[in-house]
Image (cartoon, rainbow over all chains, first blue to last red; front, side, top):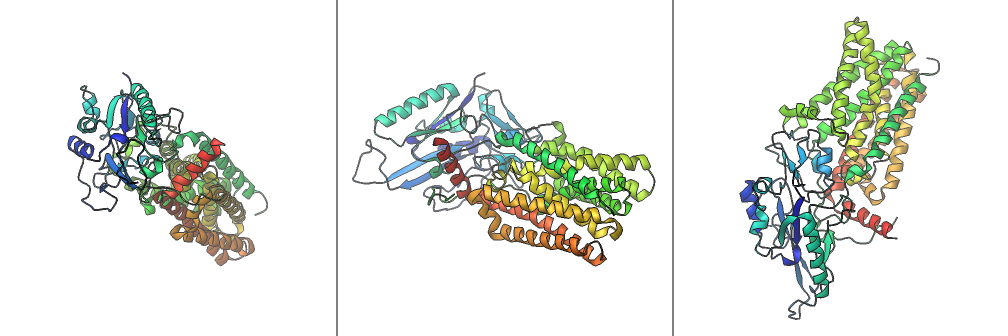
Length: 260
Length: 299
């Protein structure tokens, strides 16, 4: 079974939010607020237990590139559908103490809802701030990459609903090749800002199962510029804890020496 | 290091999520757990050196603290009735998993030690429990530092090298405080010495941590966390000074110093907890250090 994932080409996103709607419908994700945020057209705010696809909108005083039908304006509108990255080295999975979070046969990361006891450790562990806790329910929830749809050979709901094929679903290796070609194409069309994010297996999380083509720095979209699975430093942490623990033993022994 | 003058963010929204843990439960546990672990270790030492007046309150205190801890930890779960699910696996990549197993061994030992102490008999149970709790005590006191550092929370993760020493130092001075509060004057010298060592280690480790983490250290100085950390420092200094100067000769001085050290340890844990939450809320503390690291790696 080869690893499946998403390539989200944000240069194609039109900000329709069909992905958000399809995801919520298919996965029965609860409604989580009808707000006006004044964040352009983004009233979803971010990924959480009750938002598994989040379309970001950024308005900038910058032309898109030579290919823009230039009406003399220097304005561009960045739109991107964010989602769980299904990291190769997933911090949420590493820190889960019950084994509820596991790696599926598709290479995706999924929470077993009958095991999760709501300890919430995965929530601060995720370098992208994806996974969240449903307070009433008590458990944590996130994108499953439509595990139930993949199991019967269907593509995830968001990819199915996306009208521009901004969200592309398929074998991760193939998507990475396709993405490389797309960036090249955009650069040649004069869109020099285009870059891939999360495609690189040598990055801080071993590469993402859901990676992106962005038109600006990751932090502009609310993404960390250098995401990092905390487990990489864990051996050093355990070692220092062992030294500190030994220090406590030593300190107690030292305190017992002497009269009285 | 001078931080970059500006950084980009998405409408100033947080990137990473702050923990959903309740401060009362989890920062409270960080304090009580550390107190319990270090108290058990000191209690065994006191007992083996014939200082039963010091050993007794430490054993009882450890058992009480760890019992309250377990209640707080289970209560904080989203599905408390599923707390046993933690025992489905043993995962070294999860400090919480490792911790649950440590506590499963430590808590019965500490409670057995206290039970034997109260019952007056049960000698082998008491001795076994005391020694078992003493050997596991340092693990109980230090693993929680790994737990909070093993996240994406900037104020915690960036300080991961020093955090175990902060926690163990704080635990040691809390245990010393417990001893000073209840032990007879004739036997409390070990508590005075441990207070000095523990407080010294903790304060040094905190300073080193703050120096290493750059702008993220703001979270330990500003707002509610800043107040708590400053209170912890002041109470530590007062507690150690009082213990050293008068703690061996005057009951009231020993008790006040002990209480100050306990309060100091609690303030430090709540301060560290709050600093973490604050550092997660502002994307600055995620973006700027990551950009700085990328710059360093480029060069």
